[in-house]
Length: 124
Image (cartoon, rainbow, N blue to C red; front, side):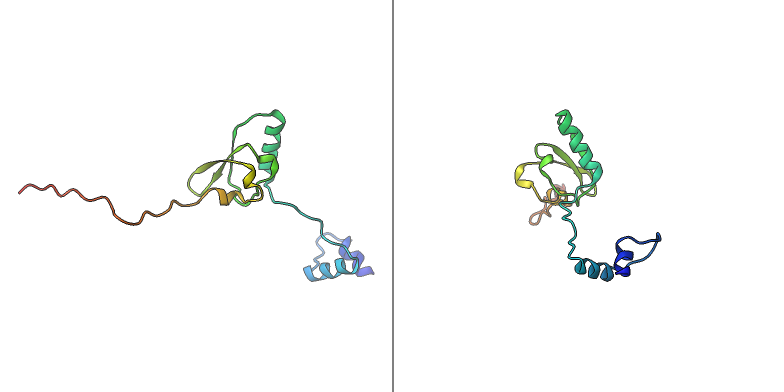
């Protein structure tokens, strides 16, 4: 029981607890980790909330491609950085749950096939 107490509330700062030790303690106490929900970068979430409170529509620039689309973002335009530039994406209800990186492609599709013909207008 002392080991369980030391894992849940370590008496010293910097006491290392391995992941497997913590997992076994949680199993013994029948504790489950709390649901975390979708990841949204804090700065992006604060900007969306502030715009919802003021009821204004501006373009929000972000580099967080891992953030997920949440219901508060619906109706806003978010500019997502794709490595070279910011791509403006208008968020709709169909996009809920997707990552922002999925909405802004990183590269343009390659054009295969004929290339523009070079002019061969030489006079002899």
